[in-house]
Length: 161
View 1: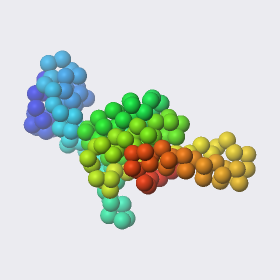
View 2: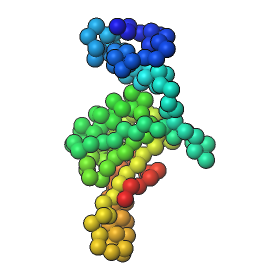
View 3: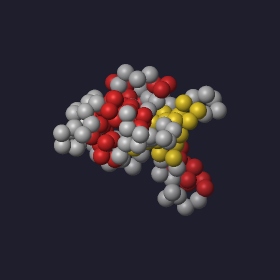
View 4: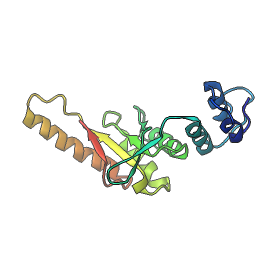
């Protein structure tokens, strides 16, 4: 059993069981550790990059936390947990309708907004022609920004159509 971050880092190739144990109590007998420490230990154990540098020198995290269909209170709670675990890239779908809870978490988290990448979405695939698709996209963008605005999110990095 792993009992510390140091023991995980000392393994040449940690197994899934080793990583799960480092996440704090998932494997019987494993010692608990803060989520941020666990995320760092998993990242340290990986041979894959956790981010890429964009052409504007911004660091873009490759792992994204995607909100599922649940209420705003749950979205807020889970977003805060994801931020504590080290996530900085988020996908909040218009289909989930919990952008307000997500945005409140972003406002409360204490992480500077410029360190967070946020992607939203719109539903435009039900349009029968180009003009209708354009109108649906405009409406979806406005609705996203109204919902995100409740938590002070004033811009998105990407919109998925």
